[in-house]
Image (cartoon, rainbow, N blue to C red; front, side, top):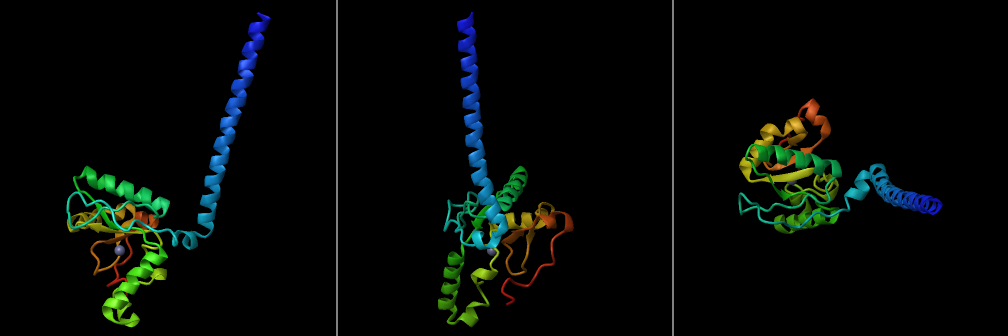
Length: 195
Ligand SMILES: [Zn+2]
């Protein structure tokens, strides 16, 4: 009886220690995550802007001319909002493909450099491509949605979820801001480059 009790209380003690150990591990992991999140919220742009996105992705299931990139690198709340938007579209039999999502500063710089080569000068390139400091893809809040009928669906239905088309000349480019879900989309601009 005594021995049973003592062995059972030893088991209890061991269980408590194991449980405390697990809580400890959980707290350490949470702490690590919390630290990372705190860093990001302290300097959101400085850190996020260095994070690259995929250069490409699997072929878009509904239109082979496009790809469907992973959303990795985008701001975490934007990824969540994107998943919500995509699920809502899917429920209405509309497939959304991310033809382009996150870009790092250096990825955007490469795009700009290509434009300089193509158009012959920095001044000309600025009419067609954005530099890293002005691109919303670098800030991790923009997606280029394809195919075009899917983008049109988002233009019509995305605003209620904070997804708005921003430019007259880019039917595919959408940005996310939680304030737009309640306040409505901002007025559209002719282009991102002021062209
Ligand atoms: Zn875009």
